[in-house]
Length: 69
Image (cartoon, rainbow, N blue to C red; front, side, top):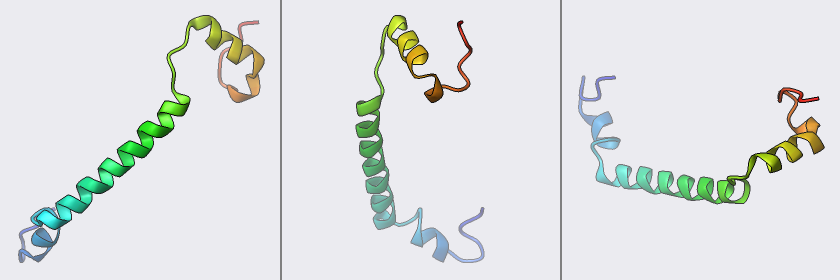
């Protein structure tokens, strides 16, 4: 999209605006903080044997995991 044609209004209301860019930056930072928080509760590096125990004990949570039986 060419922002600066036919006039500059769209450009200066978005990417040409320091205030708009600041709001966008704060929005992204807030989203990143929320994502990191959610991943911190759920995402962990675990040894393989724990992974296999999880898959074998809760197969309905992993319906596409290949069966090892």
